[in-house]
Image (tube, rainbow, N blue to C red):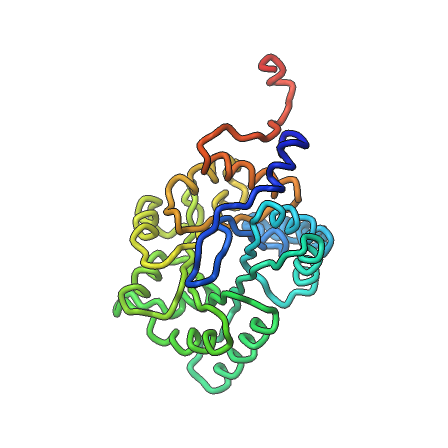
Length: 290
């Protein structure tokens, strides 16, 4: 939680650093949606708790807190009524547009029926006003071929994204994806990489993934910086912001507006090389330090 009203107001007035994906200006900190939609990477019970407690109003509170600080880019929009309504309400409260990134699941079978379903899903994404569309990991990684070092077969999907006025990117859990896409000239404007100090869900060592990020020809969106809650915010964000490029981004999900404010302030303090203005937890074991 941000330390006091003065610091909270400072966060609200701050316009978070930005980068560009092609000609699209996006905030370098992005709003994740796992904690809205029930993907905890912990347990089914945890997932259910998220879904049962989340409302459009609560999502609006969180998105509003981010947007007031200039964090106006949301990763993971989809035709979920609570999510769409929550983002819309936050836009109305702040008077500004939320830039949305879609990560749809598309069929991977090479049939007319599958192509028709892909077109339907992408039409739906475009209808939501999605600016950037990145086929989800379960789609993208199905096309990663380590034998040919290519993503042969994914091009028609990216072409369909372009045809609908969205910028194509690749959401992936594989560090090979940016390497192969760059080498073969795949039409993708940005890539996703899982990247955190714990190595959580990463397929190879952390230093290897960092090298892949720094070698990428396109900006990279790093996800799961806190390893799905396994790292404290200062540790996870400190690592992420300190080891990526100025063009790259960090995507993080929060479950409350207070957490959103804290994430923004911690991120700014790291980028500005200063002490964070956040209120620390108070417990009896630390009374002697006060």
